[in-house]
Image (cartoon, rainbow, N blue to C red):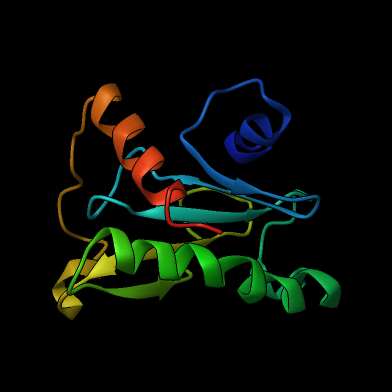
Length: 131
């Protein structure tokens, strides 16, 4: 059975896309901890990050780098927090979250509920800072 991320990658389910290449896709988390919370997902459906082929592991941070910079430009004063949790979706992924304190990346906190219009606006704003 395909993961929800595989369905997003194949276009079966829409997303608020930030960036994409042949190996990865980045899109906004629809249950974000903070505005701008972005997921980086490798395209192969592999459950655990450490089980990814070395080529994907070595490409993950170079793909994430311009997105992290765009997040910090989109949210002045914030840093980009990185997290690998791996519990909710059986498909490897990296969370990029604009943070001002460690509490901002606490996954036990309630998630934000943002409108479709707000999510589209956030995605467009972040994309505007990616060169």
